[in-house]
Length: 131
Image: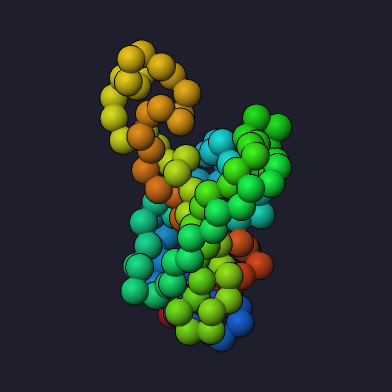
């Protein structure tokens, strides 16, 4: 699946709705994120009119990667506006929104405000080239 072309059209595999995802906002596949990037495509910006957002707050252990785990998971589900299928999640581990090493000199990403990252499951998207 080639997803780096700027003329790619991303649609929902369930209902075929055009999700209006712009490949110009697609992160390269080798970019490191704390929450991982396995079997997903990550965007820095999306057309929010094409999706519904649902808050999720679970208290149970989770492991995304060896270094990214916790007891309470707070995240936002991204659902297709057309059919309601879960297509991804919003994570707060995008690029830092500031220069420097955070408040009071702390370095971990939990202290430095970070941009949202919209992480879509590859199996929830159909990618085709625009002709």
